[in-house]
Image (cartoon, rainbow, N blue to C red; front, side):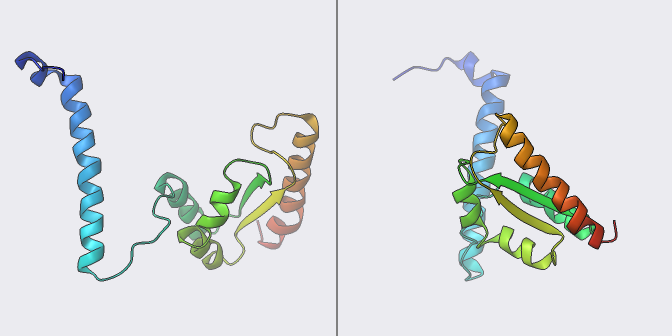
Length: 137
């Protein structure tokens, strides 16, 4: 076991690190406690990053059309499908078509080939032409 000298206890980097750890753990405990006190089950897809969901909600609230596009072989596709039964699914339903999801064959992430780039471009242009025009944009 490593020993910690007294001067390490006042190291700003160490204090910042442990402060962050305590904050994250504290939020987790508070969320679980609130869930038990309110006698409701927490959303099983709380792991979906607020940094992903909240901007989407903001766009939908402002009536901005959004296309979420990914490939059948992209690593996060299966996770996204699971997440649709949580907050993401509610967002898709409540947006009344403003937030749409399109899945393209293959691996889209990274746009690693000209063929993939063409499929993505075609999907986006089709969405812009068909769906965005009908939204009055």
